[in-house]
Image (cartoon, rainbow, N blue to C red):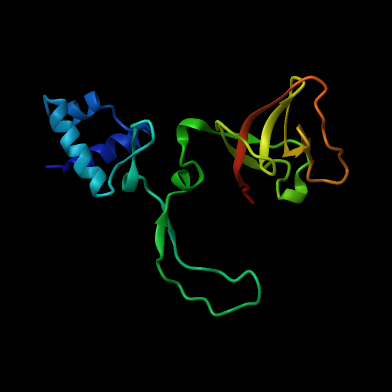
Length: 187
């Protein structure tokens, strides 16, 4: 007989989403949502499940990850020892706020000095507030771009990370859509 966490894991891996409380009741064979809530709270305390700020269930340790085996020196070479440090779920690591995050593919080279190249994928998150110095997705006079958000006196503007390009000062309107939280590049 499967344990509740195994049933939930199976549902999650087949459907790529967490079940609702009603689906959990059916899945676990319970008639009462109270019984489901009890099991959910137990699994949260064990780290099997998590909840986001809005109360939605997240997979916790149900999500499969990639083994993190150790560290590699980026400076001078050193002896390497393989040791299982942890298991990392890139989805959880890169998008902890899934409900407000999305991925965009980068076109152009205006952010190369920030380490963002054409063809890279950027993970962005919608937020309530944005700060100068952050790399943002912005709408400038109706057109979208990725740049550093800067502020001079009371005026916000966008700054590229490539000397070939000039800063962008909005003629009419500047709207910040999201902040870049990660860059993904596949070789």
